Amino acid sequence: MKNKVLFVIILCLFVLVSCRKIETSIILLQEDNIQELDDKVIFTKDGNIKRSEYIQYVFDKENFDDKVKNKNSKVEVYFKSKTEENKVPDPMSQSPVGGFVIIIYECDIIKEVNE
Image 1 (cartoon, rainbow, N blue to C red):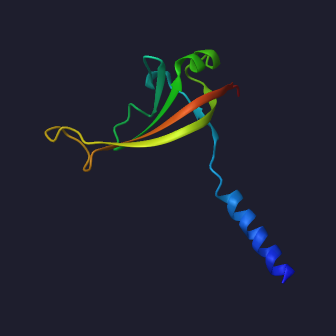
Image 2 (image 1 turned 90 degrees about the horizontal axis):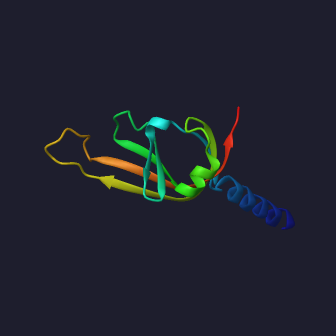
């Protein structure tokens, strides 16, 4: 009986650890895909490539200016939230079936990564 209980506890811990969300990541900024709007800085990954799905990283302008010296560098970020938007374009314009999907990550920059 003790072995079964121990096995269940270990299995539960394994599931919890394997399902844990990634809270930090390293992304490569590209100056051409960075725009400033009010108190936010928005980086659209591969924003100059036409596709049906885009990933945007939104930073607080003050945090971005403090931590990033080179706008074409790698940065370590902490993810605060994730949202998804579906944009239906003008029916008369050329666009993908079903419209566009924009995945938006609200992030804080931890540091610029030097390699």
